[in-house]
Image (cartoon, rainbow, N blue to C red; front, side, top):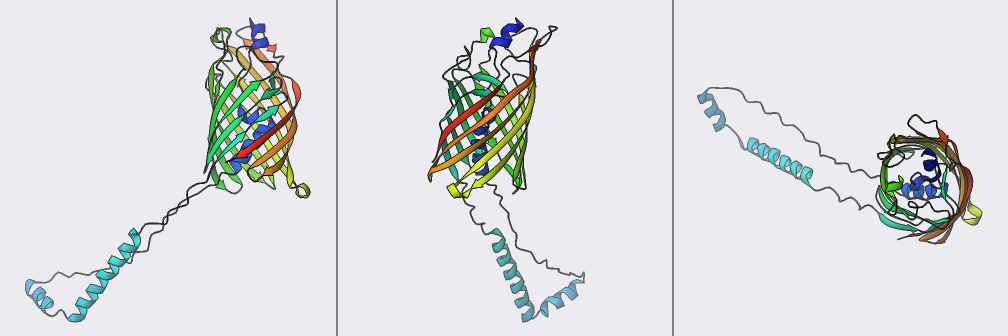
Length: 330
């Protein structure tokens, strides 16, 4: 029974890490998200102190009779100043500019379908559509394998995702997000999930031109966390109007409920790492072509069911991945 899962069950795909290049594209979209704050300013109020003495009725009458014209003018000036000050406070603030919005359509081709060090298929088409407005990004990523499909699961895979960027300053931001994995053709009777949901949170920190991104995921269906660290660095190529985007990534995960409806539950855990580089070329003002390559490898990846001994996952391998994509921004 356990060997059956080793041979056929596959982990779900996460758009950010299927290949390093897909990660780069998404990070570029996130980098476009600015952080806007509104500040309300109040006009200062000058407090007026009035001193009222308690006197007898006769004294009060004499006091009122002796109130002179200069006092009346002074009171009129005080009330007029107060009214003008209140008017200044209640005047509407300037309307902030509406957040910029865009839609990015990115069809892509990858030579290997790799996810967290596990090979899930051969050559694949991976279209992506993302809508960005202000700090919010919402998109749908999909995989359509052309070879080495996983029967009942990977043809196709459709993953809506989202994130929101909270900018602390120019070098630091916090990005919570989610991915909703969907496998329309999954065979539940064979242990495949039709859907899983994975919230995540990332911290982006840039120092001396190097971007560090620790990230934590937790799949609510597979019941387990993934911890990951990505390091990115860009080398400008001014001579050709482009750049080299380098990305290194490493992580580990541990899931307690790897397969649907199994007793005892099947556990899966493993480590992975990858190194990649991409080269974008601007074709028009609104579009660009990106080519690149990466090497990714899964290590110490095991499955275990109940008291049975753990078994190595043969799908956790090392592979080179070639990617080409074309992005249009509307």
